[in-house]
Image 1 (tube, rainbow, N blue to C red):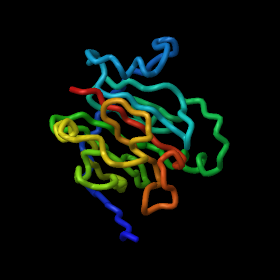
Image 2: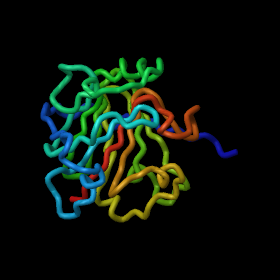
Image 3: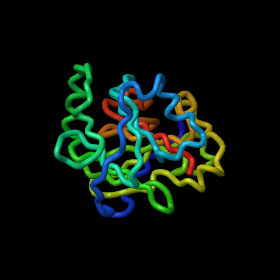
Length: 211
């Protein structure tokens, strides 16, 4: 059995917080969420965010137009995507416990060199991205980011040069374009009890538009 690999990234200490908002897709704007992702000439948004609790998506896709977005649980932790305002029927004690720990959450920031994720919460977050790993790797690592640190979670130039990763879980996830997965508090993968992100209590799927 291959040794268990866990990559812990501290990244850069907190980049400046910009309290700006995105543009939520309102009910009725799209007959199907896939319409939001399949407009090749549309540059009105640079990414969309989906919030999941285990295998269930909660709420609609959130379109991001501004260069920075705060994703948090309770108001008033910032201006942006407030997960606590979404309607969820999940009664799992673990899900409720993790929700209570999201707090200030994360900040997504689009910069010249790519997209950075800053952990504003008091607990670790876990990130999986094709541009964080060696393209020849058999599977993608899940990267742990501690509170108060940031990581370049997505690199546009590197993404263009990559083939789809040879990762069964990643290939099975529905995605269009470039996707990053982020779990709050709980990790997943070969070094954790949970093998798939769909087993994590609270997680995000961030789907990037091409530039």
